[in-house]
Length: 131
Image (cartoon, rainbow, N blue to C red; front, side, top):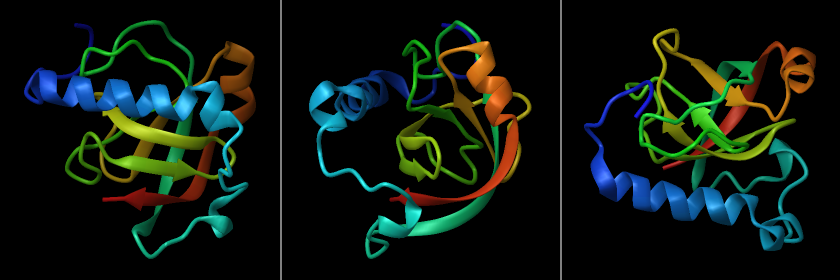
């Protein structure tokens, strides 16, 4: 299963699989997705300032899904697994992974290449969390 924990089970895998697939599908790319966090309706979301760290590694998530764009590693004490997110400069994501270095207000963003990960590096951003 890779890193993480199995405690969230198959239901989480089913939910995450559908949500990440929707977020990365061609139809989602042509939808009226917000261009940045200022365009996101915050009536259903809350804002949270976090340090966002980029990485590019193969593997699978704590939920058993393969890592891919839109899969975000979080501290589940701060952002519960399965939570939808919007990260400015990155786009839509879902909290689907945990990591040993993810403590508090730190998130890991999977990038499609080492170059993209290096270009992002580590940034402090204000994300929108949809609970």
